[in-house]
Length: 336
Ligand code: UFG
Image 1: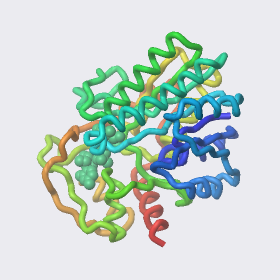
Image 2: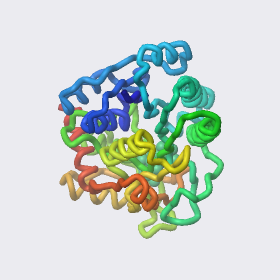
Image 3: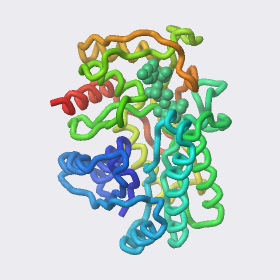
């Protein structure tokens, strides 16, 4: 049995689908603080099999211990559960440190009691800050985080690495670039809380008429069209990377106790290119304006995918057009 924390969230729910489709039994734990139970129905509609679900706040150490006693067959964890809004983390630093660190420690204590265990951790390309060289390899230095959110990802990586040294647990840190899109069935997708902070949900909400206008944050960067460049990866491809990483650990194919992989497409796309591609793929004209830069944005980030290709045997397969189209189908399904 694989424990998926935050399994009703955006990336978690897509990963549960891929796990089930590869024959893994899944237990989802989620506190529903930023997810809806209806996602369980979406997953079930796709896989025709309802995953086990437990509503639990992972900050509750006793609750976590009880869960592990009840399900001794848990052999691996994919840990998504975390708060994830960069801006909010600046306003509520303590909440972010508590939500993103305490659950991890509670889970590690339980893994430490097992004869053998493994963990996949949701990290982020944010650990690299503005990297000096593109594409970004896993060897690029980790830079001081610009937000408490980013800091919790770096701290999480360090905590896992330190614990792996003194336990039988093996781990893989997946550093995601920009996850976008939705399942092709449009049964699951991203459910942003309030006004979206990320580009793609803002675009789809503008296209559907929920928002008046998209703001493009800055056109004076030193990039070909002046807007920021990111590596946008389809969430289904990202979900598949988790299954590969998990199987690498379960089959003991890992070379080091803790390994890290960049998970992106290897291709950089600017904000204006995203807008153009969205318009072309969906036929919807977007209302947008150029505004000031957003504080904390790096100019450019895209992944070197060589290590993940070679060692995980994984590469992104879906196109940007497919990702944007699936996000649009999902948005329309929400507004039916
Ligand atoms: N953008 C806009 N308008 C918007 C929203 C975003 O122009 O309304 C631009 C941003 O300036 C950026 C690009 O679109 O250039 C992508 O922005 P997102 O907010 O979608 O994604 P980020 O690259 O900022 O976020 C990613 C991860 C976070 C991580 C962060 C830190 O999603 O988890 O990088 O750098 F913390």
